[in-house]
Length: 390
Ligand code: GLC
Image (cartoon, rainbow, N blue to C red):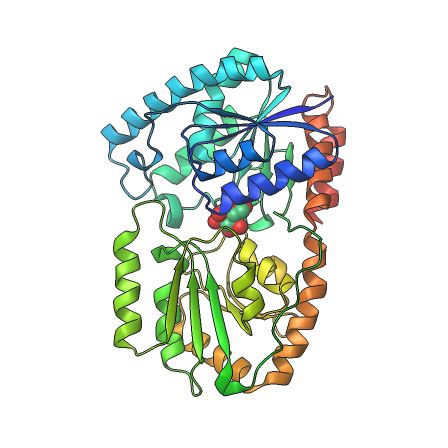
């Protein structure tokens, strides 16, 4: 019987942690025992505990922000690694106490903690990869190091998209499992409005690579401007100055923007919106909000390359534009704002497409994969991989 211990380095409610919580719930619904260990306390840890999961906080002094990919000076990296290894030592006891049969590291930092802990607890460690391990994201020095460590320290990968998987060193024990959404129907949503009434929502952490500044410039140049814009998302990892910059920019451009800050459930803003825009300027690893927006009945514009290209068929169930291309984004906004019928068609097809990302399906594939991870033969793993990556 598989017993899973998820480990994460942060308890902030950002994309990877939200995806982990959804997967944990869906696995529990399948009857799998799931516990979670957070390197530090925070909103997600409290939420999981309230939800009835065995939840461990590993340190009350660790601050995940002291070791960021933006600042990877050798001394900080070394100090951070030693700190993570220390937490990993404590995590080894937690793993034994929880009776876990497998540990899943939810980030590269968690991988370092998990490497120490899994060896102490003598259980396999799987790396659940939410970020593309690319030079553009991790930097030229760190990316190959993380790739090699990922290969050496774990005994299998679960990647959140084919795009993410392609950024790792190849291995047989590997599964693509898309972060899913719950299949329960959403509450009633607003009808698609006339062009001059259009509401546009952008959901995501306010951070430069998510490209909200590109969006504001693009929205300012539309022929018929949106009647209102919601920028939904918080700043968790020292991104406050970018938030200020966005506020200034929307003032300068005279755009009617509401900054909601972080909201636990952004669905309300999606149900209110005609169009949901995802505009990352780097390849998005997966892009949960793209699926959430489709599920909520928005006409969705998302940027390529990366995960969104595995979700959207452009012109059929959404529109894809090149990440960072303001003009292309303005053109896509103009197309959708000006054509209510097209919005209705894309939104209806988007709802049908979102059904393919049922979290229960991903959980079944993950459960199957994990059963095989401890098994002597890799046959089962390959089967799971080919079913899900196909
Ligand atoms: C990270 C990725 C995002 C993905 C999420 C869940 O936040 O940046 O693309 O949707 O993890 O896997």
